Amino acid sequence: MSTPYVISLSEFEQAWTAHRERRYGYALNRPLFALYTVLLGGFWAFWAYKLAVVGIDEQLSVIAVLFGIVSLFTVANAVWWSFVGRSSGIVCLSDRLIWRFGKEAWSVPWTAIDFDRLGIAEASQRQDEYTLRVAGIPLVLFRPHLRLVNFETFLAMTFMALKEHGRIPNRRSRS
Image 1 (spheres, rainbow, N blue to C red):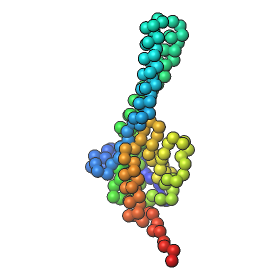
Image 2: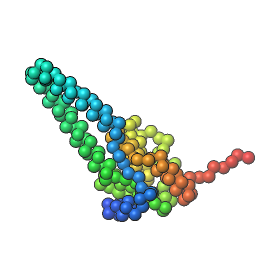
Image 3: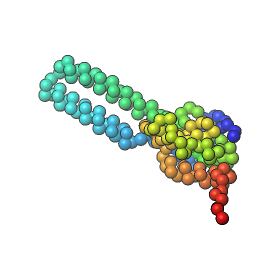
């Protein structure tokens, strides 16, 4: 099996803009960030209430500093994954698969992708992460903070392209 070759980011951008109907982008996992907002918002609302009722004291100050650090980390995490999501994507062309995750981009012809080695039925190293392995390179479908938009359609397009290029064997009937 051939290895995917690295392409320049400008090549990926050209394919991304030229093939609008065959591209798949990433988005933040909104339920997770809604949970962060509810939990941290609830804490800060409770803290503000206690501050108004009791006044400032040492315990409230220590708790505020700790949750302030957690809140800053959460905001920085959201900004980071938003950047990664905006700068990543997948393009399914008629002859090849192109994808970018972060600052790296790859291109693989459909004829070089082995259906049995995609890792669809295999568990990921992490239980909360779903990836395909295209010639040994992970192609991320879902991470806790990021998900591929319309990944079902992407998988269908992938299977159809693999079938079209003879990479999924025909099922033989038993007679």
